[in-house]
Structure formats: structure tokens, C-alpha cells
Length: 231
Image 1 (spheres, one colour):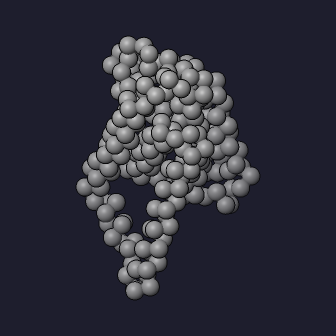
Image 2 (cartoon, one colour; image 1 turned 120 degrees about the horizontal axis):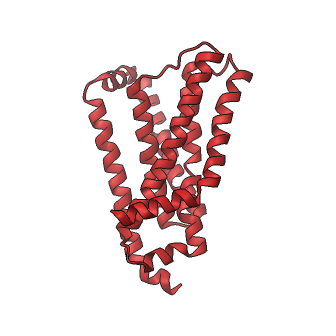
């Protein structure tokens, strides 16, 4: 565990510059944009904008932690040290989650203060909704990390977002098909999200996605370590 935290702190220190710049840009956008579009950027849209903006920035974090180290071959140096693939990946996953959490929380805080004190509006967001969106971001981040572990940077960007696009299109198609038959799925979804079992279901799905992505990344690194060293 100590070796994993060494990787964690190394990555945070090494990428603190670009990470700070990215966080500043995002917070700046969320601070300035409501002043120019106060009528459009309502309280509900603001939370969706925070989520979508954080979703896009998830591409930068795996690129720093994995793609650059692959290019510089520093990830191979890590594998020659007395550290297992699991410890190395655990440190990188923790670093990625910490970076994502920092940007997400800073986005929420800046949005809340701008809506509250500049536009005199309340952010339409229950604690459960904020936590759910946070878990969704971290789960998707783990998928992106696994993709960057397996593929080249260009393909690694396409694979997770391509899968996400297919899921969205499938959801729209199913919803449209049900609506054509006079079946509304919105009440059932609202009831599910308001139920006491929803937080537990969300946490279990989050754990399942993260553990699966981590295990796939670990197996790939262990299987291709020898080949990578030769290359």
C-alpha cells in the first residue's frame, strides 16, 4: 500500500502544473459564463453543465497519467522497480480520482456561489443527485483509464466515448419506442431514484465498474510487461 501511495503522490506532484491550469480554466468558465447568459444558464442547466464539462475533462487526466508515461517509457521504469502492477495501477487510479474529485468539487462550489450571490438563484440539486453524478464521473473515469492502459491515445479516447454514445442512442431508441406505445418510463425512473434502494444500487454499480476496469488494466499490464520491455 505504501508503494501505491508513492505512485499517487508522484503523479500529483508531477502533473500539478497542468492540473492546476485545467482546474482554473473550468472554474473560470463556470464563474464568468452565468454573468453573460443569466437567462439561459438556469439553476438546473448549471448542474448539467458542470457534469458535462467535467465529463469532457476526464480525457486529460488519463493522458497525463498513462499516455505520457507510455511515450516517455517511464511506465516501463516503474515496472522494473520492486512494485507490482496492482500497486502501480492503484496509485494511478487514486491519483486520477483525486484530480477528478478536485475539479468536480471546485466546479460545484463556484457554481453554487455564482448562482447564490450573483444571480440570486438556488442550484436545483439534491445531495443524492450530486453524489450520483459524482459516482458516474468516477466510474466513467475508471473505464477511460482502462482504455488508455490497453490502447493508443487516439483509440483510447474513441472507445469509451463511443460506448457512451451507443448507450445514449440505445436509451433514446428504447424511450421513443415505449412512448410510441403510450408507455411512459419517466414515472418509473423518478420512483426508482427516490427509493431508498437507489443509493445502494448506485454504489454497487460504481464498485462493479471500477473493479472490472482495474482488473482488466492489471491483467493487460502483467500480460504485456515482457513484450513492452523488449519494445
